[in-house]
Image 1 (tube, one colour):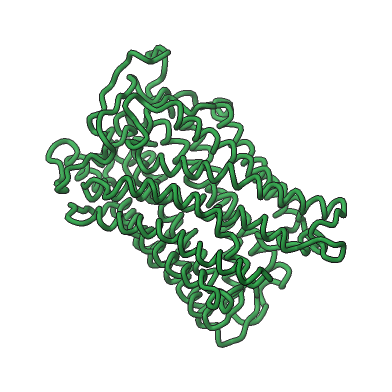
Image 2: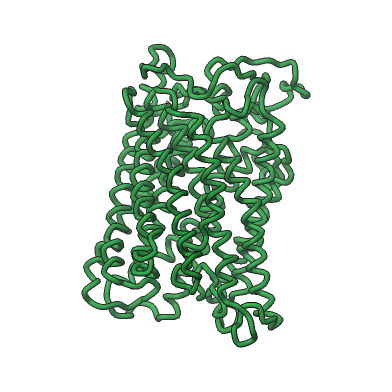
Length: 565
């Protein structure tokens, strides 16, 4: 979209009345808490999710300390259950699910389609308040003693027997879920009704397509989770025999409801990450995205087929052998569009003039970790192997390679790619590259040993274990220290850059999206003039050359991001 032109004929406002940038539009706490600017709301989300990321990180750090030795000698078995439950609940529902949509989706979607804001600005702010309210319930659970059911809330333990704060934890997830639903509705309506002139569906950036498809998944799947949690709370609070087999209930029904949401939730986490990588790789390869149409169809296919594979989480729960075969087959089918995306990213790199800035390194990390997670997912889609590996550390490693390795790598790729657009400042490139490499190394150091011990039969959810597994746990805990350092480093140098980082131009990477056609940081109204789109996205030269004009100079200058003004 490098040939986007600007036209002020359709603006319903006088842009001269706005401040130059959204960051300077009032500094009071009230102005932030009552804002309807999508960019400020994105920053509120980012701050909120960062807090929960570190709370969840502390919980799992205590778990890894316990697992250094085979004996249960650091925390009790009950405390261990509460720690990994807290980690799971916070990381899934208060970081991974909203991480990219609530932050970068909120900030970038209107900019990428040439709109002034989301369709429902007040609903957008309300969705953040719902997330905060859900988070407040989670903090209450933490301070009151925790919950010990695991993040899956499996019945009848959660609905009958647990003595922990199950109701409060379920309310936290329930309320936060409606916040994501509100965000999904906002994204869908905005994409349908507020695209700039000339921005047809097949001129949309892949990031916008990712936000659109994930929004459809959110609004269709999340109510099922809300229903499952409501039924669980009804059984626990009122004694309604829904899942308790002693009263005629069916505990497997809860698993069907839970995984009907939670497998699509995997794609709620990973589809936005795919959208981020689809923006970063063409920019730093200086090539058009290979197979754009197929990439769109792959996103749609993943979002549709993902609803039909929930049963592969239940191969050992007593399902019919015929149902197991169907779910196994569909689990292999859903891997095909994911493989298409990996192939197309790789093909985009072919003959490209690749540069290795931090966003590109994080994107490479995503491709490597996601591919490993996807390939091991095929193991678990095979019924005989899944029966062997169920409830072992093999499943934990697979899950983390996809959800944490993939989603978090893409989150950091987005953070570094759009940091200059968000703040108007550049970060120190050398430190950022080091952090990207360290994160990839630390992640593999942490989780690859878990594949080995899981294949050897080490069960998950145990604080004590046979001594022969200790070497793998020691390696995993040591890797977790490296990974924690890689997560903390960007917090330091990005904060430093807010004051001392070199000022960024409007388009320091020489990218082609509409978000790069406005100032850095953008004004409150996003665009002084309404953009009109005349080209397809990712309109880089087909032979992959690097521009010799201002874009090349700004790319070179961005590599000196540690310079002061």
